[in-house]
Length: 468
Image (tube, rainbow, N blue to C red):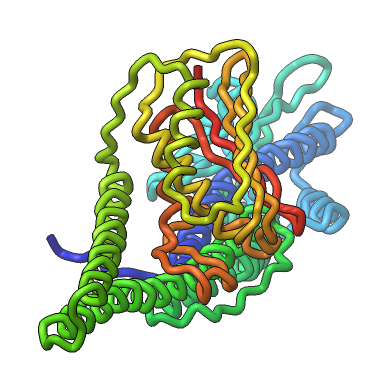
């Protein structure tokens, strides 16, 4: 497939706006020209009718004879000067037998004298005729009467092309259209440039991000809502990408460290046993440490695999009718047995009314185990964890609250992001930063959600929401 030639947004829309403007002005120009031509034609015909009426009254003497006198030309000249006209019609005077008594100056006078019968015999509404040379002529006829008796005709005519040449309206129209065209192009140029500039800036910023540079600078003070939202959203996206890039870098370093540490430990301990550096009870203790490190390593690999399965939508949920009272009690009891800290206080609160719902006990156990482990890390030895079960009309709420140090306010929006680990936790707790993100995916797969209810220096509260 051939790639179409690309052009800039500014050039693309400026060209199309200019073409549209030119087409619009052309249509307006044609319509205006037709109107000016028609209006000028009617004005000339009205002038010729008035002049013909005046001449028909003044060429008759007191005895009823048609008298040709020099004042006829002065009438035309005076009317032309008084009305400031750029043209002067030609004139023919005919007698009652339609014979020419007077031919005014003009290239068509002799021809029209021969066609006098055709001219004066035309209907009253006919005002145009074509000469033998194909030129269009306007004409006006007026009967000469004496004592209510027709004794002759006055005919005035004027070439139409002379009318078009003489009118100034076309000049004014041309100037107006050219001025509007230049003004319209200037407005289109400035507006399109103003509109395309922020989009161009965003495109340049996108190219900058492609190169791995997320430190972009965009002007956010645009008054247009759409442009402002575009720039604001793009800026937020760039900041988010920067954070994800940092998280990716930290993840690679973290995963490498977390996997390398148990492997190095296992390798050293096994080598010590192999080389008989330790033996007997001490060797057995080394092997138990290797077993724990192997289990921890296996758990991290399983977390990565499970998270990847959830991330691509391969989530296996097996719903069955469960007594949520007994399920929460059993999960917390099993978790408590596995804890080495005897000073940790775990309190479970349940309503008197039994709650039964469709749920996957294994998935709920995964979520609660993760919340309880996080709470233990936050509280430390001698801490307190409260688990409260309650319900509403449509939801089941399982609240896990600790009295630990809390999550810093700046980190709270990111606690559910995959691979995210707080600054304090990075240096004190081993892990991949998948626990809360994985737990929320499970909760959403169950039709509910996992939310951070509150966190302060007095402790942190997470709420697992399940649908009934």
